[in-house]
Image 1 (cartoon, one colour):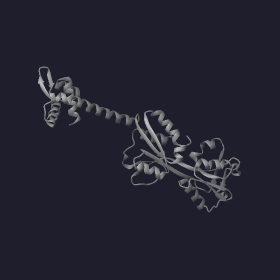
Image 2: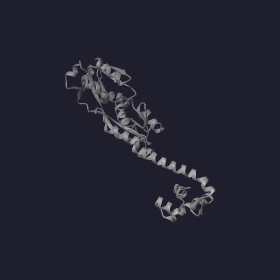
Image 3: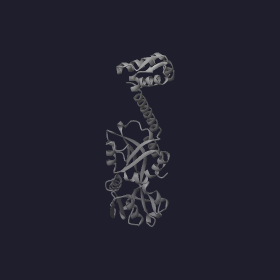
Image 4: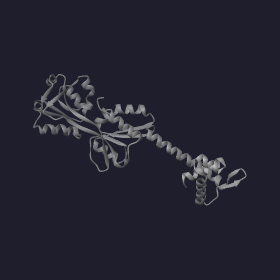
Length: 297
């Protein structure tokens, strides 16, 4: 039973005339008649009889008519739902994000997204990127945001690059200088955060490769704690720029350039299942916002 057959049946029932129904549906009369005959063959009953005033429904036709109307209405609603989804007006958007992204990037992006998509249902989950990838692969979220992790079933979409910045308190001796040598960190206390994160490994790797052994090390479990330690003058830290905007603007923390050390940048990507298809609707609009709205802007 095809939609075109039900539409032909419904329109003939409404107009009582095959010719006018064909004109209404923009098909030829033979084509519409063929649809009706095919429907009758499939059901094994006659749906119309010719009457003095045109085509009249049989008992079987009257029994089928409300179901035909409902089926056509359901298809129309389905088409509208797809159109609304494609336009981004309605739908769902569930995101998984690494802690730094969910804390320092997502709030502003989601505020803009919600303003332009008030009817989209949203949800956010946080975890390390390995957990984010797992949520994407299990279809618990539409997309994840974190560092690149390769997986055969995952597509990585570049979003922005974050940078690790050496910061000190405004009272630190480094704050009066434009730049320092990496080896000078050996005379200071280094503050590291979140041993499970890639930031920790990037910082540790830079220090090891330069042969620098800091005076001592403080390890904390999150960026906010690391920032407060630095502000209080307890040491220096390499922290993601996306997490430093407020403190740098207020000059509570001072950035210091390290001579001889290459910029430490970490790409941030959106993670999607490879079989999820081309992003559309809310997912596509959110991705565009995320790529357009770089941290710090």
